[in-house]
Length: 402
Ligand code: ADP
Image (cartoon, rainbow, N blue to C red; front, side):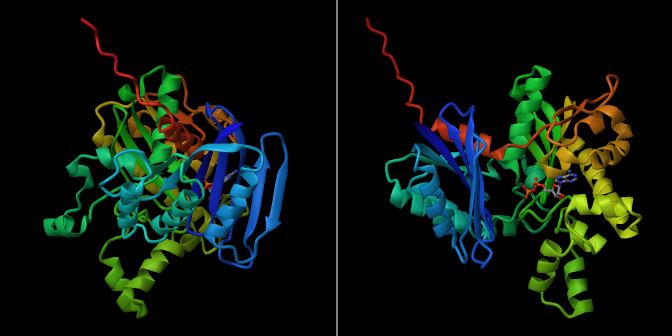
């Protein structure tokens, strides 16, 4: 039985999923988490209801890969392997088959994503070594946003910095924005290339995207995934002068300020409690004012960003919520929609509450000027589909005789 293996190398984990060749059936999935630490462990679930787990203390990403391969190739052969790669720079405007040339470009983009790309490269090289004949594809978080027009991707800083260092807005979560956009188009009976929508991916990282006729026209993340919305641990937008000011006030280096904005800010920083929306919702319900403040700031900034995405659209067919918070928090959706009255969006409280854990659908009233939907993120499925394209033989060109 042939399968497609999807690998997603994060900064401290290696996730995987196994699909059938038609990409209709998720056969297994799992994670090796807490890599490079004594707590590293392997977890796997199969579609048949089985589960396996074991400790892998101190496992490196390559050791994690070996464990995954030994588990998933024990029962089946791998027809192709797809990798999520965070940064494709300006070079990759779509998924790419992996060869030495494309791998070299992914390595060069590592300067822009030092926590992620080098780990993907390590995984890809090891897979190439073990399966030199199996097609491999790289699917990029940045690629969908390569359609951003210059007015949306340039920072207003001296142009030379773009020319010399490629400092510009790239955007991330592109695999997720494109996938939920396609799902929304299907629900509305539209071709994706006709869809105009705003999608918001709210997980640990959060971003919004303006999709204009099936292409990304603007997004909230920028040079790095720190820009834009308030996130679990990340501040999102701050006054750029804050870096120097904070460094001076607290006698910190710029690197330390960067660390605070990336890891100790966002929901965690504001609440002083947690980066997890579930914990904050429970604390707010119990009367914790800082938890309330953190959620209020999160929703306010999200609503502001949705309106700013509207500047890149002439019309809007749908607003889409996805990601762990977007899919599972009726309260965040309701509070955000309440600030979007100017768009004519009207939340249906009952429908909204009914789309809680794992259920998808419309959450606005019939007469809402714009329908809003909850759509489940499925980046692994999107990567598997893209990977399949590299399996198909090139179309035969028939020459007309005579
Ligand atoms: P990642 O970006 O790591 O893939 P997820 O998409 O899994 O993250 O989203 C994680 C976020 O989703 C966390 O803030 C978590 O609290 C939130 N979340 C998950 N389930 C719920 C829920 N039932 N209610 C509110 N928030 C939830």
